[in-house]
Image 1 (cartoon, helix red, strand yellow):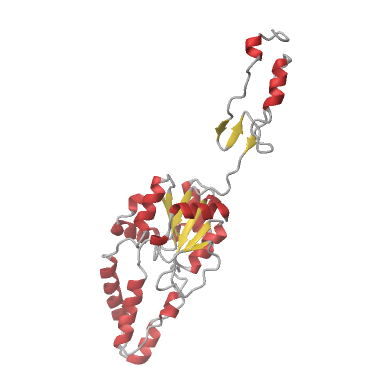
Image 2 (cartoon, rainbow, N blue to C red):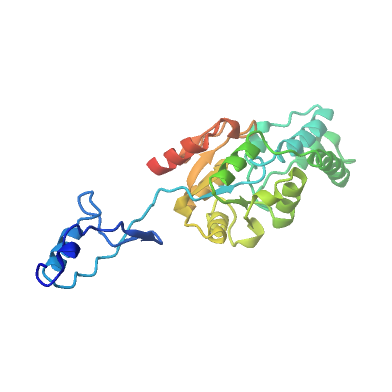
Length: 286
């Protein structure tokens, strides 16, 4: 017996591993790379018959861990943008006009009311007094709706969603379209059950490029924005995700590939080229 403590209890006393709960380490402090640094003091107290001090509670902030993935919808999950361009292009070409993809691309990612382009005026100038904008809109709408009915997920989408699901990383949609449209696109493509939450432009005060819709999506996931990755095909959407504090992945399309994606942390030609482990490493090292 030493100092009132039986020898078999004083000898071989060792620290138990600290418990980790809620991002904090209990039962040990991190100091000089040794989480058992408090043990020596506690051990000496036991030998002396003095109650050991209560260990400090140290929080470990895993600020770079990827915990959530948030996707744009139009042009990223499904190509809803090219059919609209093709409809206008066909109508323009019938009148001997070129429909400039460079100007059209500037509208990609816009919310309702954001685009100021008037596609009817050039047609009216060529056709003259008999121009019927309602008839043109009806043709465009019919062309577009037929194409939308054949939508499929963009290349690489399903594989990435599978990898994220396997890694227990929940997914969300953050779109500049309204909820009814997003629900329709996800239903047509069969992607509805792949997303835990959805946030859309009609639910926030300011659409993209403001961060509101991304902040709402992250809030609904219950994950801080800095722990999420955003996938976008337009500079407008990328700016929104960047402003919200997310890790940003740009996936340019045929309509947006000529734009600069300077705010992107990572750029891929297609989601087919994206490897989850590489994404996680880039997220951690940003």
